[in-house]
Image (cartoon, helix red, strand yellow):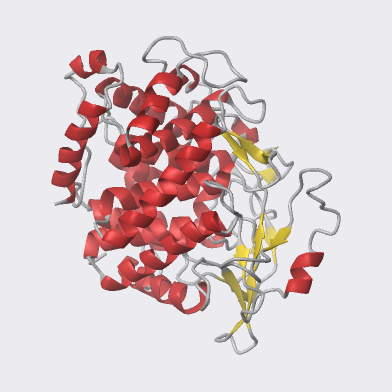
Length: 496
């Protein structure tokens, strides 16, 4: 049913969003149909035993603990947590600048789960987190501006108002732009606190989760919330010429999104901007279509839409992604690019653009030609992204696909820091990363890496040492997102 709905939507959107793209519609050789529910043969990993639990049993356990521990009562966001000494009672949440990112990725996992199973529980989870994502926009008081996190200090396990006020003592937004917790003193959020200086990291995750939910979930409440979020972000991007502008009127530290920004590679920023505006155009129509086609793609002739750059189609920047820098690669940028490309490929209907985006997926995100391309990193989630969105004419990467399943089989069945880690003494250092961290040249097995809440974002070659900390429990959105995406497309079966 979802695929039929998508194909009907594709026909409508392509017709009204041509925006000078009619010439591209003549390219009939490009297959514009996307894979949908169950369209792939199940993967196989016969030579790896994995953990005693099946993939489905691990997913069920992680889905259960997410609700039990990681979404605290009174909050609609996902947190890693510290348990009390009994190992079964919440002591406190683990504060993070990236609560919005982890919450959004968990929301996407529940959208795939709902699309695969129609589980009422997954729909309830998704409704709750999407409400939290919308609240992350509302609490800032600036249309389209997310907070990094919002806190009710009256809730158990969260910092008090006094602790929040003391966290950034040198930050005075009336003097210069900086990051801090800000108290809301009036209105429906009075007494709550929110953190400013949001990064493009959070936007990449939020817009990915919105793209997934919009495509797969037919629930009226979800669609209404997603529409509000996407159009608010679209307005913020268009009205501020691809800058994320904070509550003080200043661009956030990692908030320049236009291609010629000196803060990132032009192709990287171009990809994120194209993805977010394409989604806004699908959800909201003409205003965003005009910006996507006429400004970002220059389809109506040369137009200067962004003051800081010369007019140029953003597709021309895409080969300059900066994701194949050998030891100095930014793995966080890989994550943002992967999330943005997924949404862009699921919602682009122009055959010529779709062909170009698929080419960029293959050459800039999957096999960059350096020593550490994503193709060999044994990253289950990004491998699944490639499998379902690649050009159908490209060869099926059988070895990499099988390895992605094997990694999920060996994925730890608990997210507790229950074991010590010392890959520094067991692997050979070959270089240092962009933050001077030691690296080896083979992917470290996921079962011996330091525990994290989103393994896929990390550098799999980084060497680490860490003590066991069994009361620190990371949230499980990494496994859940990869697993339920695989289940939806048929790469994973319920029996595995």
